[in-house]
Length: 438
Image 1: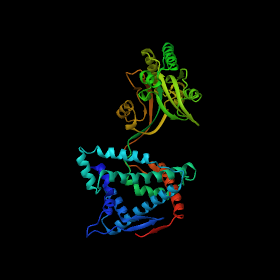
Image 2: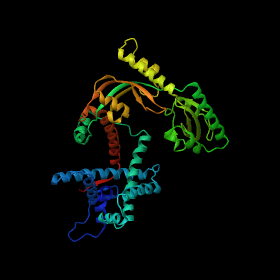
Image 3: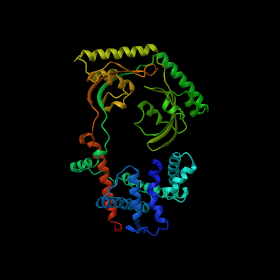
Image 4: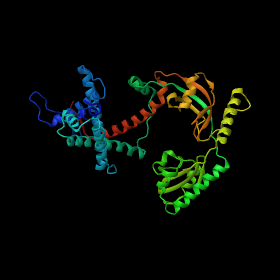
C-alpha cells in the first residue's frame, strides 16, 4: 500500500465498512457517545487507530492499553464535535463549498500522482473499502469541512480577544517534556557570532545612470506601459521580478522606511517617481488599499558596482579585521559595526544552526573550530552584489540531544495556547449534552 494513500484513505476503511452490510461473524457498529443530538460511533475510533498505525505509531497489544487509547481518541472526537457544533451555531463563521472542494482537489491530486496508472489508484481506493473515487472524495469533503469549522472557531475567539494564553506551571512544562522528549529532533551544531558586513556602494556616476534609467521607465509607465511586463524585463529584484514585481499585501514595518514613506502616500493606480533606498531606485505602483495595508508592485533598478568599489569595500573589511586582530581597546566592536556595517544586516546572532548559514560562513567556521576572529568572509564572490564579513565566533554548541532548557520557551508558548483552547472547550462542555457510552 502506498504511504500517502495509507495516510489519507486507510483511516476511512472502517467508516465505509460500517455503512455496508456486515458479514454474519461481524459485530454491528454501536454508539459510544452522544454530543448534543449527534452520535459518535465505535467505527470512528477504529478509523483513528488505523490512521495512527498508518502514520507509524505502535498500537498497544494489551487490553488495558487498548482501552486507554480508545478513550483518549474518543475524548478528542468529542472535543472536535463540540467545536463543530459551536461553529455551526456561530453565523459569523463560514466555510464555503468552494474552499472544501479546493482542499479535496489538492488532496486528490497529491494522492493520485503517487500511482503510475488510474487502475492502480482505483484498486487502492477499493481496498480502502470505498465504492468509488467519488465516494472517497465525499468522505474527504466532510472531514475537511469539520476541521475548517473547528479551526475558524478558534481563530474567531483569538480575534475577539477571548482566547488569551494561560501560562503553564513548571510542573506542566516538565510533564509535557517527559511525554514528548523521545519525539524531539536532535539539536544541530550551532554557533553564536557577531559580525560587521561591509557592503560595496556604487559611485556617483553609477547612481546617476541608475536614476536616469528609473526615470525613463517612470515616463513609459505613466504613458500606459504594462507595469508587470516592465518588472519582468527590467527589475533587479529577483524575488519579485518573475511575478511582475508583485509584493502582495503589506503593512508598515515590513519594508525599509524610505520605500514605505512613499508607498503609503500613493493612490491606487498611481506610479511613483524613483525612490532611492540602500537597495537602489524603486518605482512603486499601488494597486489597492485598505486600512493600514496596501497591495503594490515595484521595479528595482540597482546601480552597477564597479570593480574599484568592490576593492574599496574589501580593503575596508581587511582594515576592520586588522583592528580587531590587534585587540585595540580604544575602539569597540559595536562602534565599528555601527560606523561601517550594513544596517540591513544583523550584527549579533545566537545559536544559529551551522547548516542554516550561507555556504561561505559554513566553510570558514567548519575549518576553524576555535572561538574568536575568523578570516574575512566574501559572500557572493564573483557577483556585483558581493559583501565582505568581519566575523567573530563567540560560542559553539555541538550537536546532540535536546535538553529541557533548550526548548523550554517553545514548550511554554505551545502549552499556553493549548491551555487557552482547553479552557474554552471546557466552557463549551458545560453548555451541551454529552453522554459517554464507551
